[in-house]
Image (cartoon, rainbow, N blue to C red):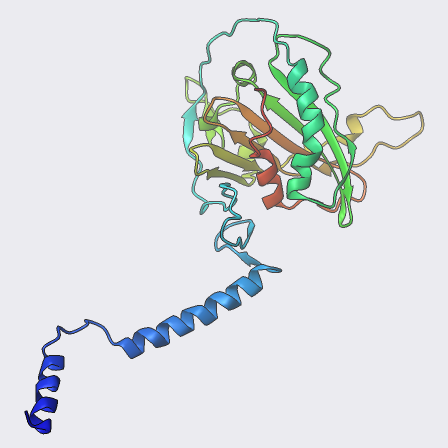
Length: 280
């Protein structure tokens, strides 16, 4: 076989291959650009947070494997719906013993808080309000701590299913105008002032609710004779986690001297949604 004929035959075989459907050179260029972009993104994520459009929170960039399954991004604000006040059933009054849960939470709470704020120093973590078996089915605590960037105090309430009913904590009534059976709105300052209220669905089907705090009348406190009452101050956020098992965890900030928001909004949400805060 002549050499020229062999070359022509080989060229014919190459031309018989089906088309790739894409330009290999273009694919290579795109892959190089994506690789360069990914390296830049990972570098930025180690020390910078990105702003989420139309939300009140900042969400830290997470590297693969670091996601904790908690959503902190508030949805786009929408008009509050009008709902009729729920008629809740009566619950029995059994004596609930939460001694074991109290001991566990006091032991684990510092670690739970340090998970969202590693540099805090705790000054109060005990559930002193619990004096033994009772009918209330919840534990409450005032947590105080300091951090290099400020100090903070908040009340932490963990409600069992019966306590949720007794306290009338209903998700459908959050961020809503609640009316009675005759359609008369409740006297709710949050509604009148149109304070911030966000419902943030979670991947597991639960919901986090973030509300702006109200004004605390410090003058209501007992003052020493001749002492001027303190001026009213603005309470911080009120954050709820309505869980799929029917329980609720609530965290609301208390005003403290030189309050500088040691925990961000995102950290407060991650804290209240921590699965370790339970009465199991």
